[in-house]
Length: 201
Length: 213
Image 1 (tube, each protein chain N blue to C red):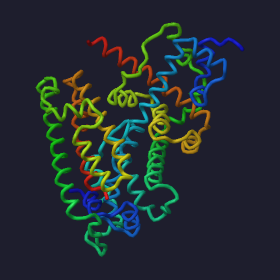
Image 2: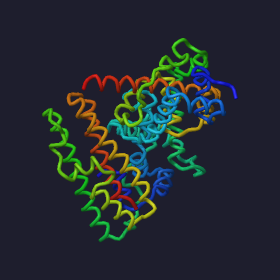
Image 3: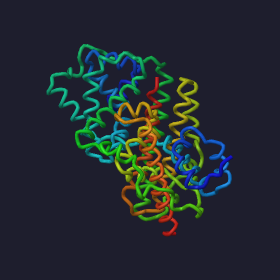
Image 4: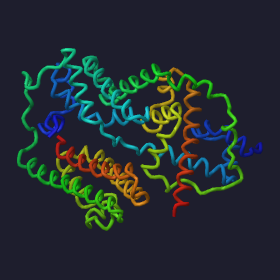
């Protein structure tokens, strides 16, 4: 049985585990890791699209958690606080790497490939009912990094545009525009996947 | 009211998606199948994304790395220190019964995952290898075991039932999606891992439910 399960099975609440972890209790910190590792890792993986990077960033996020947990005052839910911390760790890492958001403002300029839809006047079947989790996860992985980050933060993680703009250091309009482009790109990827599936049958 | 064409509508689509449309945009949407399909797709993608619950698990080396770093920095207090865990807060008999049942169900789910995995490896339709109870998992939102789990939770901690209902529905959907993908691409190892992972997630959910206060 993992440490998280042992502690939860012992009847300790998460709030109590947080209090004890603040006082340096290693077992309670491990329990918190067990409770939140999946969500933090999924966030890192979806934002980076790379397993090794996601694992390194998950490790870094929990190390920062250990160092900063004493500053958690409970103004927001612990998971919200930890999640924001993890997002900041990922964004910091991407900035060091030469973050895709460097070109974010430039991407606001209209590009040839992003003009009016080429399918105007040609009706196709809608996607509803044809997307499954596996296809959607794969399509998100294949998004350009700048689009992927905004899409993950807004549509999956539920951040508002003003929060994303603050975290990413861009305008709210830019965040909205990038999200729209991300959804349009995803639509293309999913329609392609759907067409390939039909062709295989 | 001004006439709006597809090109004009699609230029204003980001704002339309965020805050709804003007009368001109709404009128165009009602009369244009291409743009209404496009809007339907974008809304569908946004809704589908909200259902992507975290399913990936980091490898054990992540926790090892955290421990090693904390030890190097002298931040980690050895286990078994002065803090002691609280005794059980839930009645022992009820808890013990629930553990046995939920543990057995979790074990069955892991076995089902292995059966499904073996079926795919043999390039067969996995559905032939499933038991009737797993077939129910794949077709209905909740099977008998799920219902029993939810009933137990309702009796112990009713406020947690909605959260577990949502998670169970998500993981059951995940199993259905992964199974369908596995049937379509039986030689794709990623898809096979997704299916195994889906069953493992369900088993983990049952174990978490058994640990819920």
